[in-house]
Length: 221
Image (tube, rainbow, N blue to C red; front, side):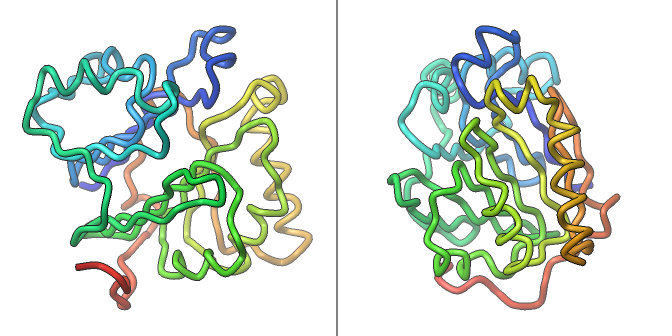
């Protein structure tokens, strides 16, 4: 059963300090891939009975501590973990305008894309055209129009919002996602489901009728 575990939802050090939330680390259970092991990741893995020895690959969207604070501790417990910094047969890495890393991950059941920020050229979105599940960080300066463009251009089955800054946390991520849904409804773009991540949320993609699209990803080795 393909599961995605959201170990935390905070996208800034300020949000972690003021709310006690963990950073927005993500674990893909079936692929054994950990994304952005920031502050609190090691503890959350233990609380969710995920052994460090289970993790095969780590992806880092940037070299900021909010993304890699727990990396050294995790690697000290499992020397076999690979830090992926170039494309392989499962993962494709795409640079943002601010030189961060976005990821496209081809699992056995679906294609997942993770975007750490909204600073993308529109032509870059073509890289994500076969995405089923889109995970997007929503920092305080997040542009809703970018999300609407993603949904219009790519039409994923599911969008998950995470990596929240303090403004969105105060507004309430659920209310933020409802506002986006309302705008989608007005634009008649309702095929895509949108949900906010919660701390330690476990998402079973089978529940969303997500299936791997027939096209293979260009650029994969």
